[in-house]
Length: 463
Image (cartoon, rainbow, N blue to C red):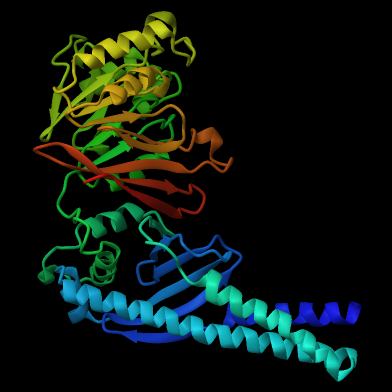
């Protein structure tokens, strides 16, 4: 029995080795790709463009391995045709890609099964076992053949991609995807050639394009980590930033001075306070040109209030200060993070008066808004509402009955004191339609502060 077990294990290990090493290259009309498998990962179809160190990952593979498609070269003419949205060109490339994957998997079935037989045979020779022991090469060979054919082959619609990069430029890649229908005269740069061609494959013709639509960069919970401001500015790319509280830890004048450059990360920079912010901080931001929103109206540098609903581009935006905001008169004392039912009721009354008059509402604590949003969803709303939240340090998107809530996580990775604790920098990019207003997609971005690697998952909302 030990001999038979050794033969079977040798066959399985040989098949695994073949799975890891075997790769092929295929020529498609859009360019040349290399196909391979990376075992011991969560199952996915992985498309990677090394020249820009950027890729996209789809679920749908049931084997714990990545079916890896690496783009080695791009045919510019075909890529340009695909980028302009030609249905015939897109259909041809997708058909070619399916055939390339199918032919690779067929070869991989033969290679892994053959390697399993050879590995088992080698173990038989090493052990000097009887020739009839070779019959035990069949189980590992069959196991690998079935695993490749039925578990490695991608299944489903592959419509929930996760974008990733091994550098800090994932927001640039996301923007390139949205700009995929730009004219061919702008396709000369290597980055655009690669990203645009691939982006059109990721946005099938049956789905509406996001090109040219307004983008809102959503963030919160910086907690004094000024090192993350560059990532925020890069993600915003000159557009508006909606910051849902907790820029600092206590809102002291020293912290306010350290964060003097935060206003320049967005155009405009729109903020409402969190429980770690203070009235002093909010006034200093207003003096520097930020749009500081409260339930009483836009905070002016002199402490007075303007309109409750402000225009950010064509969008109507309002914000609600944290009821636990710290106060200079109280020595910036920590007022806790809990919200009461009375505070929830006041928020609900405030929001009810704004329905139909506002597109975006900003609030730091999700618990403060939860009862009001639950009631709003229960009775329905004729006009879509986007609610930007923070506080939990957890990224989240929820869309139901016309109400979409977005939490970008923690831009500061929980603060500078937590950078070694495995917490990623988080933010969100929301793509919207105007006239009438409608959120159509949310990209949740996470950046590892240690090595700069980044991932981004896209949630397509109902068009």
